[in-house]
Image (cartoon, rainbow over all chains, first blue to last red; front, side, top):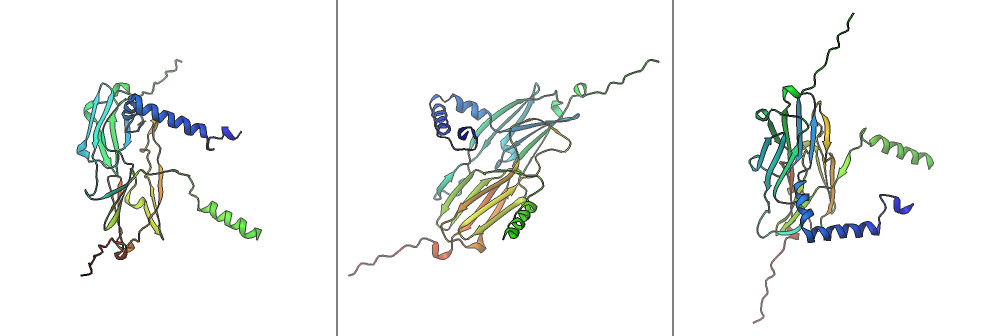
Length: 145
Length: 131
């Protein structure tokens, strides 16, 4: 019972995560795929729009590059380091820097030339209007008398 | 005795927000310079008024509540991240000049400057040689 509790600490979990970490270091393959999962995206939709949001703190809007081609949204960017001064001693460095690319397939066809994007408080929001032809339509049912 | 206990429990229940938000640990960089400590926390989606910073003795607590992640009238089709509250505690060993703490929130990153108190700054000790 004890081991099936997901919150309980397990020595095997620790070992598994260590093993994963080692594999990641040595084959280099998984690290590449995990890079392509950054940033995490939430995809939202309603009858009129498709919205993609991403948490990208500490960027400048000009360092972000967005593209919509063939129903695919590509977010490219680079997060630059912000070390305060050369002589500052670093105690902890968890915030990652570097280039990233993420492509996501959109659930609906969108109007490529009407895409708008906003960057506020470190959250990117891309609004893409759906193509007229793919919007849901209410079908009237005629009752024959 | 029992009475006071139940009262305390009731109070705690009331203090809880109606909708429980998930807590996340913000990724953080910490730098130290001669005159102070610099903390940088990634807190995307936290507005200025959603931020709460407390320094109690040597314990620094940073709390940031994210604005609602759901755009109005939209349904989530695929979700890879959740939103909630960023919270993290640090113990600050040096003496900090509390009146001069500066906090800035820019593009979802919290920049916190904790200047060291005058007596905690490193001092060069002159060595005199007895002639």
